Amino acid sequence: MDSRIPTSPPVIEPVAAGVYRPLWSVVIPTYNCIGWLRQTLESVLAQDPGPEKMQIEVIDDCSTDGDVGALVQELGKGRVAFYRQEVNRGSLRNFETALKRSRGYLVHLLHGDDLVLKGYYREMEKLFSLFPQAGAAFSRYAYIDDQNNITPPGDALLNEPGIIEDFLYQIAQKQMLQACAMVVKRHVYEHLGSFYAVHYGEDWEMWARIAAHYPVAYSPVSLALYRGGQGHASSITSNFLKTGQNIRDIQKVIDIMQGYLPKEKRKLLKRMAFRNFSRHYAKASNRIYYHNPRAALVQAKGALKMHQDIKTIYWVMKLYLLHFTKLISVNNHK
Image (cartoon, rainbow, N blue to C red; front, side):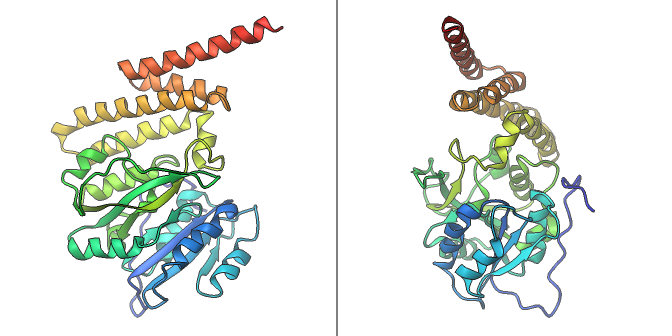
């Protein structure tokens, strides 16, 4: 059995000769997210152009929270294919299986708890038509929590659809998108391989790897919803917060990215990446403190080790003050 975390990018072989190839493959990897999968599938089926143009398939990693196959059959009524791993293989291997099972020229790897909004696939088709040199394209996106509250999207990267200039240098500094918003030409995965190295930040590494080899197109229209943030308890990130594995993984991804960058850019961009992520984790530690103080302290400590700039120090000191105030209050009530 292959290791759960590949040490090099797994090979994605070309689609076999003679196999019918639609334009789209929407492949949906799932693991214990049946509570959100219905919305995910409905968001795709609502803009389904038909089987001649789009493959839709759910790839389940031995979920234990319900009958995923039955839900797929109920909603898809034969339109949505279903594949279940024989054993739980972990998210990276499940992504690899999804890519290998894709047949379309354009691959949308849509996690089983994320959503797309009406017009997403039309907008992506338009991008690839306008910019055929692009190896991948993505739209603006917003966050959705477990109660379906939507956070307004962040600032647009471009004012109109286009190729993002120097995208490699931009994305080497920070994560700028979520997988739900991204579409990749299948031949790009065939060229570069699948996800590898880490469980947290594996998508960031992939987008940088693609940007090192291909132009990337972008639409400022917000058409994807990422299920994440503080209210999403089932996120793979939640288990890593308590141990600081998320920070160690991000540091590993930053090191890997150095190989994609010109030598003269590496030192500066690495420093900027450490600065941006240290600020992110220090600030996040304050958000999660009240429901997970142990993880918050781990995140703050890791952020301070990663980089010490004024904003990181501010958020870490704010957290420590909050923690000490709580300890004093507890002691006074004993």
